Image (cartoon, rainbow, N blue to C red; front, side, top):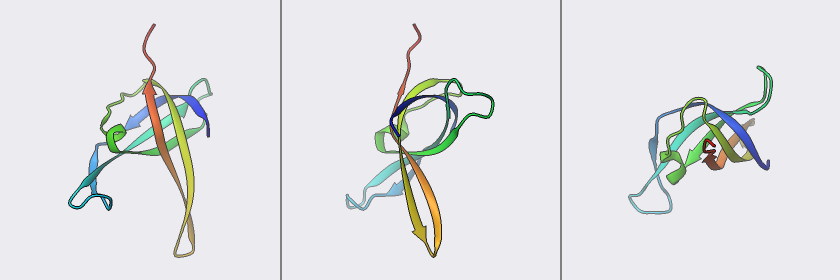
Amino acid sequence: MGTTVFRVVSQGVVTYIPSTKQEGGQLAKCLIRLKEFGGSKFGNEYACTMFGNLAQCKFYEGDLVVASLRFQVHEVNGAMYQEVVANDVTKLSAL
């Protein structure tokens, strides 16, 4: 998916998970819900995961942001799961 304008619905708390790339290191992880801007009440909404420094950024409900999302599908024990990762989220400043 390309870069799109979204409205922040909610953001969860930051948690830290063990990092496999650094011995004893941790990676920040946070969930964020984004809704496509300009849509109706029933517009597309995405539950995304943010990692690293991006996960430590704080966004508030109603903030307008520009985001780039990555969609992946994983198979675990015969079940298919879709993962949505926010690669980049930038808050739009007020004029």
